[in-house]
Length: 290
Image (cartoon, rainbow, N blue to C red; front, top):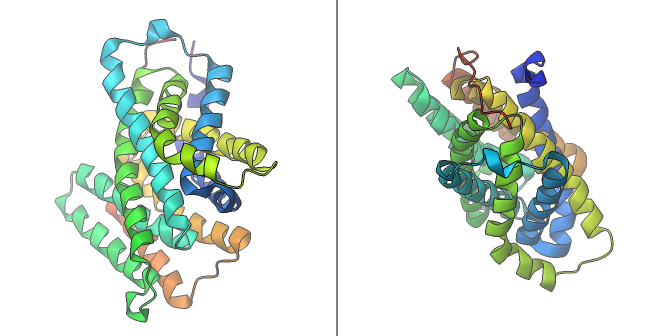
């Protein structure tokens, strides 16, 4: 059966995914206050796993032994990306965290570009990050930035392995395997925070709603988009995400950036757009039907 997602432009799926991810991160802040960033990440992965397994019911017959290492790596980097980023936004503004995190996939996309000169653009993005964090003010949270950099490294690997899993499995069934793995990997950090936190009545339904936004819908859209886009083209669209982070931080969290920080975001976005040029993948991979 033909994949209905081919009727939808891949860029629209990617942009929708970015917006949903940042909305999920913005809504996560209130949950972080109750059960910590690790607990929030773990609850999101757990609810996401349940939703995906119930809705998609992946067929074990389509799973080969050779798929296991890739699924394990994607599950690990998905859990690490989400957990480290939530630890970051506990300490630094959302827009700043997204811009710092963006250095990871930007570097991966620049390395994948056939033009070696593309490596200059991560340096331009780094200059934008410096403007965002304003280290000369003496108020930079080094630990928060370190968490965001770790999330960025995970994000770069996540894009690579998401495309591989998306090529292998039909639709988003690959996601139904990787999110439960991510829930297992995040449990050692998340479960103690949940048990030791303030688990008031609204935390669980809030975490379930956030999980629907991210990882379920947003990560699924990314997987479908990456099946039909190069890392270069996808990376170009990712340049918008720091701007989404700033807007969501302003609207949901009242985190207003200073003029110099807005310039920093502009540099990051410009670097991301300039670093990668490319279109759709010439021959979209045909996954094995489930």
